[in-house]
Image (tube, rainbow, N blue to C red; front, side, top):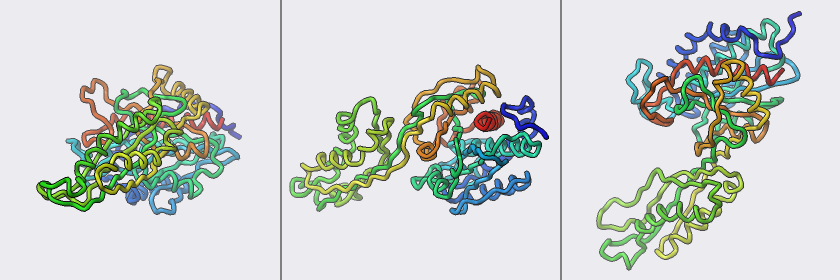
Length: 397
């Protein structure tokens, strides 16, 4: 009987290379046919077909999109997660695999994550057939990471973390060169909540603002004063930040409107400050508009807490990167104000998220996530596959 491996097999690079071209083609197919949150029907079908062809038994999530797929058996289970949805952004790249869906694009690299996890599944299935997988690995192809109605929470509600000891994920980092991975113990992302402030007034003539509530002026005060007031009411180390993305009020140049609203995001690095943010926002908005004879309604939608990487999981990832890519591939990374619903998994089980470098060598443009020009060096797919496999084997072993 073949003994199960407790370390990373020396032929891992060869096993991954055998699927490299297929994974690049798979990623390009996803990139050309992106699907928004909760609508990832085609993506789910393609993943299901490929996993079944590899002799595996994927299970669709109750939502109808996304999959869970267990590989191997035993008393210990480790999970690997990739998100599969795209963004409502126009693809502006001039490449053969550009999005064919107007207004939808994989501008966050989820197609890269998905391809890397699929590759890990194919390698782990081969190791399992050879009797060299020392436990169970659960692949989590998660829908709707970009949705306020988090796909991670849907996975958890569907039992996706049942029996799982530890979970790992990767996220594309366009500011890090391909071949490099960024690791950080503790918080690595921020909370991300959505705020809508809606003001209501009587309306009136712009010639006589003193006879009504000057709603647009009050809205302007909310836009400028709420971020400033929060910075004086919250510990600066929490880095609480409000940035507005949409404002709307009125249709005529000489009429003060009866209604207007501004929408934006609140991000925070500190979990305690995040917990108290909704009531503080409501208190400050009421104080800001009180002199202007308008009413204010605040809609505060909780997003995600910070991703807080568990130290042991980070050390396992570090060992996986050093083993598969070499010690020079490991780097430290800072905490960002970006949000990631991987945080919900870490509220249930230990785990860690690493930043996967995807910037091509000698790239001079400063491209970022959530831009229509975003693209990734596809060599990062095989790197992500090797790291996924290494992390799973080391965690089980």
